[in-house]
Image 1 (tube, chains in turn yellow, red):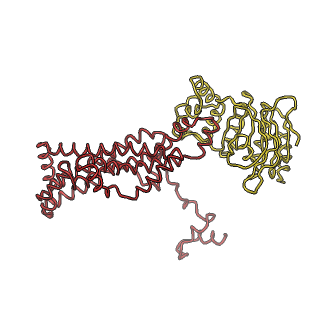
Image 2 (cartoon, chains in turn purple, cyan; image 1 turned 45 degrees about the vertical axis):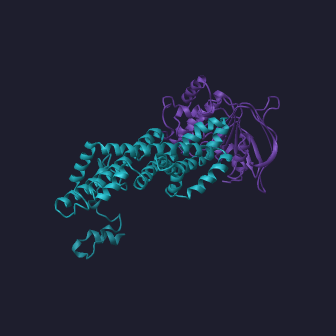
Image 3 (tube, helix red, strand yellow; image 1 turned 90 degrees about the vertical axis):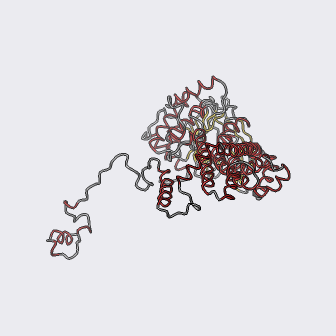
Length: 241
Length: 300
């Protein structure tokens, strides 16, 4: 599969010949992927297609998984999980600052909370927030590190449809401002088309499609060009409506 | 449909059984059920109901009232169960003599020393056993083995080792306190959610930072369960110890009262034990509420 990233710019992520196996089952096979700095890549696939495995490999979270291949990733990576994964015994701001050091971080943490629309909730307990708010805190926690690569594993999968749409807009705004490279794992075709510059479809452990989406933001779910991409991607996923 | 409408519109006397509620379409407008009005703040239908103010004191108060009533009616032999008034005046007398205060001080200090020692030992062993593989291999196996020996069974051995003075009593109490602390804290430390480990890894948190910010606060709920059990355990051991080998303290006073047939003194001492146990439990719960304020849930 031809790398969509321009050969001239240095890649933020470079994956070559990546394979991962669980027992005898090959989950990823010979994956090659370059992600350019600032590029927003969505990774689509059915459950069990290996998309989370790929994300975890890039995040360096797959210690006990057998496999091979080369991975070049930036030093500063942030991960957003499907669950907000906030520490319930830390207040919101302390959750955002978890792992950071120094007084400068506190200011950055407040700014990040402000950016996700949670200014004034610094002293709240995670338990007091709604699901969407908790996930916004998780986004703020990711942003505090000013990452060169943002990894998101179905970050909106547990949210209701209305909250999800608002979160799409927020994520896109944040990414436009901070310009990290993004790898977003999702099974939601609309989410992928509306958000990403480039959509990859993972089928049976390798890429079944690599689709650039060159539409201006913000994108409407009803834009006929969005519908066109959606149809093409559904086709690539083997879903025929 | 038409049949039913016909029947319902007919005079009720013509129909032996009421058929009206059968279908909604045929129901006359006047029979429409009135919607019950909902008040805000009403009690949950399937919940236990509203909280009764000082409800927990209601049961004990009833028992005391029953006791006083039966005594006054002469239905209780005063040598077996003295009336509450007698118990109260005995308590006042003992307090005025100073012997009750001295007994309480002796007993409470034994329990407190044992508690502090057991707590320190439990934490000191549970933390390395819960955080490192070496600690787990060395400490946890031994502790689990020892657990199968009841701490009160070690009394003869402790008397031989430490003599019959205060140190053996404190030692036995400490051992009784140690196990609930150790077991619960160790379990909580080992049971930290794996997802938090992943999170800390992605954030580049150091091992010490992980222990300080995730493992220790995350294990506090389990620790407090152990602490409450330990408070109870310390009083339990104390009661047994003071009745076997003591020359002072509440248990010794009870033992003597038994010899002289002074039932009301036994009652006074039992009540004091109860009060001490209740107070210590309330104290632990107070600390727990403070420390775990993030956990405050619907129950409070």
